[in-house]
Each structure stands twice: as structure tokens, then as C-alpha cells.
Length: 68
Image 1 (cartoon, rainbow, N blue to C red):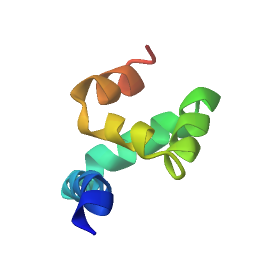
Image 2 (image 1 turned 180 degrees about the vertical axis):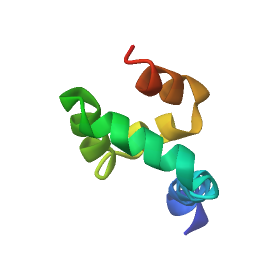
Image 3 (image 1 turned 60 degrees about the vertical axis):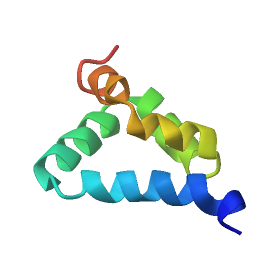
Image 4 (image 1 turned 30 degrees about the vertical axis):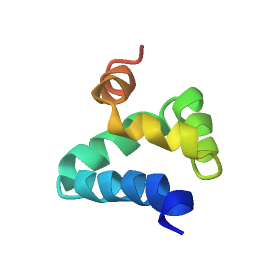
């Protein structure tokens, strides 16, 4: 069972760590609401584990914050 759900649990744990910094999380969400591309990407992350793994990469947040 862990072999099938292990990676999803790891991604969920990293998302939970992000919530330890509510001001950073709010900043990211506010940036995403102003641009259609991050909205689509974040919505697609709900269904695709591969996209959720992007949340573990610092470059994802850099690109989101600086619109790159």
C-alpha cells in the first residue's frame, strides 16, 4: 500500500509544511488569483500527482512570485 500512496503522502506532507508560513502561503495564493496561468496549473495539481511534485521545488515558488 505504501508503494502506491507513498509519493502522494510525501507531497501532501510538503504542502503541509508550507502552511506553517501562512503569510507566504497567502502571498502565493494572491499572486495566483491575479494570473490565469497559475490558476489553471494549481487546479490541474488536484488531479495530477506529477504536477503536485512541483510544489516541492523552490523554482516553482520563484516562478510564481516573479511571474516567470
